[in-house]
Image (cartoon, rainbow, N blue to C red; front, side, top):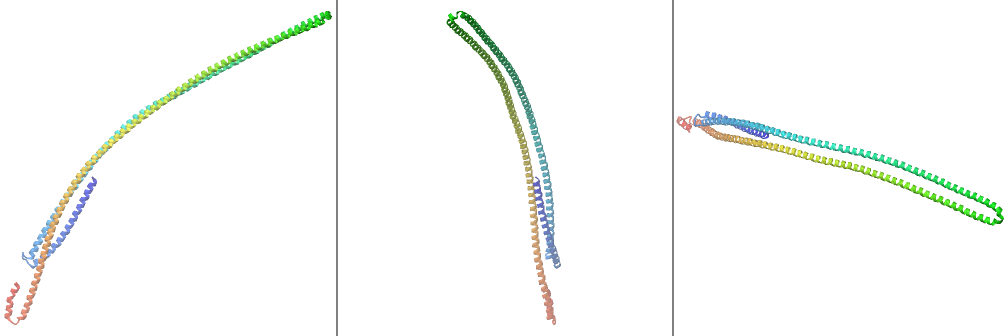
Amino acid sequence: MNERVTRLTYDLRHAAKGRDDASAKVAELTKSLGSLQQQLLETTTRLNRISANPNSTEGMTERVRLMMELANEEIADFKRQADDYAQGVRAEADAHGAGVRAAADDYAGQTRGKADNYAANTVRAADEAAAGRRADADAYAANLKAKHDKLVADAIERGKQLEADYKRNRAELDAEYEGMRTALGAEHTKLMADSRAEIERQSKANEARIAQLYDDASTHRDELDAEALRIRGQLDTDADTKRAAADEQAEQDLLTKRTAAEADLAARTEQAEATFAERTAELERTLAARGDEIEQDLADRTAKADTEITARLDSAEKRAAKLVAEAEKLQAETNALVTDQMAAADTEIAAKRAAIDEETTALRALAEKETSELRASTDKETSAQRATTEKETTALRASVEKETTALRESVEKKTTALLAEAEAKSTEAAAKHHAATDYETRVSEQVTNAFSLLEEAKKHFAGAVKPAANTNGNKPAGARR
């Protein structure tokens, strides 16, 4: 709008400049006309000096002067009217352009202010809505984070509790295992000590029994030796009496008895040794069986204890593994739940943020669209007003230019006509002046010729009266010619 008004002002200034140029040209023409009038006045004065007849050149020159004065007055009136009309039209155009520009500027300012206020209100409402949605999303996220932190803390506390229970159960199982191991070791040591004591006791008893059997065998052998000695003494005694008769028989009997005694002693010794060996073997078998039984019992108890300990350890480890697995499962479930909740929360937050962003974008787009539409409407109305103003200004300027052109053409036509008429009259006056000058020249020549003739006549007829009288009588006729 400002550019259009500036352009219109420039065009008006250009038109004013053209008008000023036309005025300057008219002034120049007026000056030329004044000089022509001066020339006409001089010519009129000269013609008035020549002749005072109205039909003469001086009368015609006076009429031309009057016509030129009337033409100058009419030109001055036309110029004044054109200037007044141009100034009035220019003032009216300036006032109308200023009013339209002020109205357009006010309307554009009001519309722009309304659009800016509406855009600011819309953006503020969108920002408030986005801030509210963002605050809700942040509160929801904070709530979910608090729940997540609580679940994580509960899971960590549950894990710590399960780990403490596992450590406590493991410590109890280790203590129980160590107690059972200590008890079984003590029992095993006691059984081994009892077995060793029993074996030593049996060994001592066997040794005592063997010593007793050996003592019995020695006693029996001593008895047999004593009996043999007794019998030998008896036999020696009897032999002394009966030696002669029975040396051979006695020695034979002694040898037989000795052989029988040795055989009996050997048999008893063998029997005692066999009995001792049998009892020793039986005792060893008994001891071995008892040792095997003790070792088997000890191995069974140890295996049972190991089995029970292994079972308890396996059970404890299974329970611990189960507890650990449950804890890990619970932690995994908690983590999965927390992850799912966090993912759901993130998804929901992202969805809400996306919805908020989309709604904010939609609100901003709507605000921008409405602002754009309002601005477009404002621009359209402003453009329409500018176009109307420009159209009116153009029409007014065209009308002014047309009227100015018409006035200028009329003035130029009238000026041209007046100038042509003045030039024609000036030409005519010049022609008449030239004719008058020629006539004056001819008259002067004729007068000079007449005077020359008169002088010649005077000289010729100086001596005669009649020719002089004839010459004087012909003078008026020559003057009339």
